[in-house]
Amino acid sequence: SRDNSYDKNLYDEVKEYIKKQNPKNKIFIVHRLDKDTSGLIVFAKSELVKRKLQDNWTEVKRYYYAVVEKTLTQNGHLEDYLFETKTHDVIITKDKKKGKLAITDFEVIKYNTKYSLLNINIKTGRKNQIRVQLANINHPIVGNKKYSKKCSSPMCLQAYKLQFIHPISNELLNIEIKINHNFQNLIN
Figure (spheres, one colour):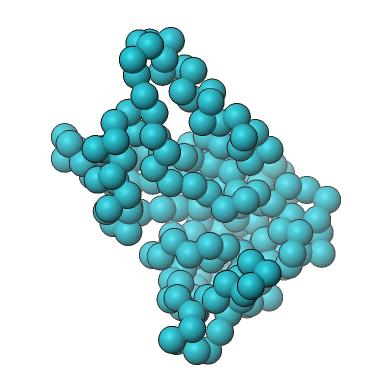
């Protein structure tokens, strides 16, 4: 599980933990989460496993919880082309040659008069994909400093589930954590 406020120390903490088991152990970062996103991060204990996971990362099923502004009652499928500007902002473009395709599916779990809780499955892994696409349909993620008016809380986006085939054992791995209790407090 990850909290971006401790991002600088996460690698060191994991490295220290596995070296306690055996000083020869090494750790390799497989992927990252966007800034201000909390949740699951995968590390590998060998460079071979790291490379195999990264080479097949598009096959990994990635699920997120998000609390968005306003009432949203219908599930959705979003396809947009995203472009990163020189100032590192990610925006939606109509130019298919300029942007990269981003595909996001979401299911509404629960909603009230102010917020909606979504279960999100991304089919692509573009930078800021979820926050840009949801803001584009006028349901920005709560706490998203760029798109949300309600910025007092941390961003309500959590990577909660990963499903993938282990590159060595060929076992289907299903890694999942519980929903952030702050998300539930907003929606209840």
